[in-house]
Amino acid sequence: MKLYLISLTLLSITFSASQAAQDKQPLPHAFDAGWKGEKTCELMFEDASVRVGRCIFPPGIGHEKHFHNPHFGYVLEGGTLEITDQTGIRTVKTKTDGTWNTEAVTIHEAVNIGDTTTRYIIVESKPGK
Image 1 (tube, rainbow, N blue to C red):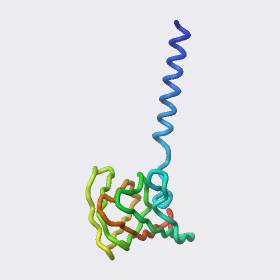
Image 2: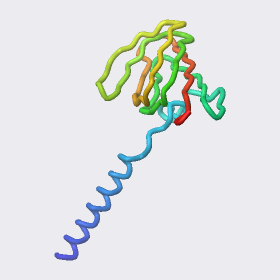
Image 3: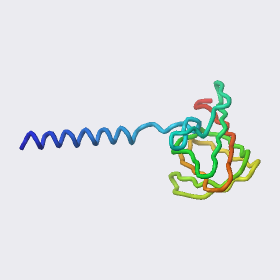
Image 4: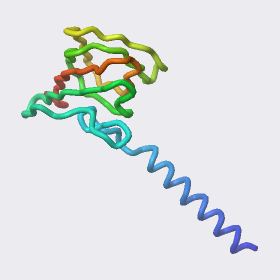
């Protein structure tokens, strides 16, 4: 009986450690994240200071939880996204030729809940640049 309890305890500890390791997996960068195994962004340019990417989200397609370095965004084609971040879930409507910028690292997930494809260009500074 003692051996059985020791085995269960070790199994529980191993499972807990494994779960903790999974929870601490680093988030993918925005240009590396996709949706259900499919890429939604492509890296268009990179040098020592910046990365530039294009992201395309057809209706029902999104962008799994990821992070962005401080960045500037330009809307090629607007649409309606549902964004989930540390503040909760909100609906964001973007307009063609719109822009936005952030000065800090951001973490979120997004899905296109509209009926049109939406496209963006994102210009990110590299850390320390």
